[in-house]
Image (spheres, rainbow, N blue to C red):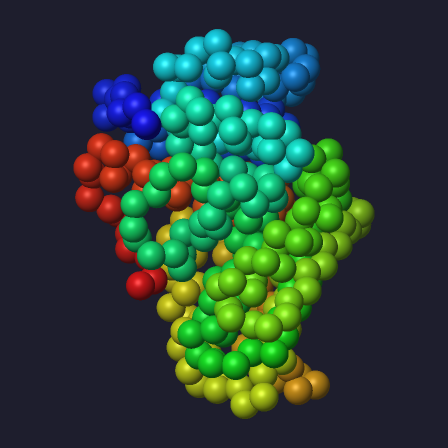
Length: 305
C-alpha cells in the first residue's frame, strides 16, 4: 500500500541514488523545481565531485546506497535512480516494498517506459523507466512515424555523443542501452524491427548530441509525417528547449531520414552533454507530472493525446 506523499510547503521530497554526472545534473535541475525539493544525494565515494557539490549546497549526502532509504523510509516521496541497470535490479524490489514512486534513469526496463512528450497524461505510479538518452531523443520521432504510417518495416537509431559526457554507468550499460532503446522504438512506432547504435566521439572540442533516425517504409506519407513531427517536436521542446531538427524529414536511398540535435542547458556539465540533459529533463517532467497529480496542481503543459 503506497503511503501518501508528504509536502515540503507545496513540494514533494526527492532522493537521488547515484552521484555521477546524471545524478548531479539532476540535483541541479531539481533545485529549480517549484514542485520538488532534493533532500539527499546518495553515492558511494564521499570525495566524489557530486557529493562535494551537494554538500556545498546544504543537501544531505550519504555513501550508504539503497541502505540510506531503508534506514530512512519516510525521508522522501520520489526516488530517482541514476546508478546502473544492474544496481536498479537490486533497488527496485526494495523501493517497491517501501512504497516509493521511482523514476528509473537506468536502462533496466523494470517498469513501463515514460517519454513525456508522447505518453498519455494519465496518472503515474510505481516504477517509471526513462528508457535511455537515445530513446528520449528518438522515440518522439518514432512515435510521429507511427502516427503517420500503419506499416513500418524497420527503424534504425544512430546517436553520437561526446566521450566526455559518457560516464562510467553509461559505458557499463551499453548492451542494456541498445536493447532498451530498440524495445522502446518498436513499442512507440509499431515498427517490426529496430536497431540502435551509440557512438562515443572523442573529438575536441566536444560535439553536441546528434541522433539520426532511418525508417524503411513501403509507402511513406511525408506530408503527414512532417505534420506529426512538427507537433511532437513542439511537445519535446516544452521540457527540452535545446531539442531541434537539423535534417529532414527527407527520403534518401529509399529510407525516411530525420536528424536532430540536443543542446543541454549546462546545469552541471557543459551544453554539449545534451544526452544527459534530455533524459534528466524528461525525468523532471515525469516527476512534476506525478507531483501535480499528488498535490492536485493544474498541469503546465499537455502531452500529445
